Length: 114
Image (cartoon, rainbow, N blue to C red; front, side, top):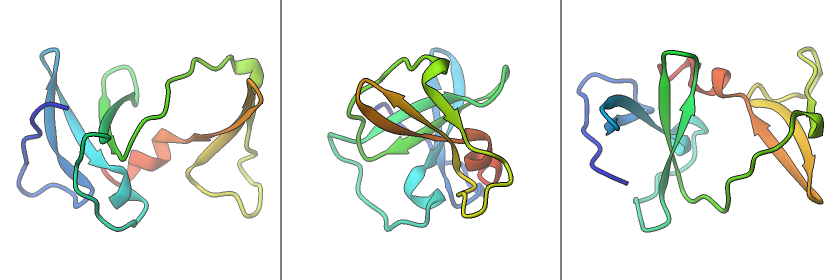
């Protein structure tokens, strides 16, 4: 996973920063974003790099990654903006290879952390 350097004065969701191929990337803790209990980093822990926009990437510390899939847009059903009961973090649902995959809205997730 590499060394995460702490940055004093950051939002509590921010763990620190890492260097990814010469680019400094902020790392946030998924557990802190969702108000889950803390967990020690172990061999399964991973940092998923997410491109927020053309100029910013964010690292998301997660407990584990099962697999990475390239899902065609035709398999994705986007959530309606005004749908009642909709979680602000859910962007849509994909039906792919006999699986239902919940798509997280990275813009909403990182809005409070960055």
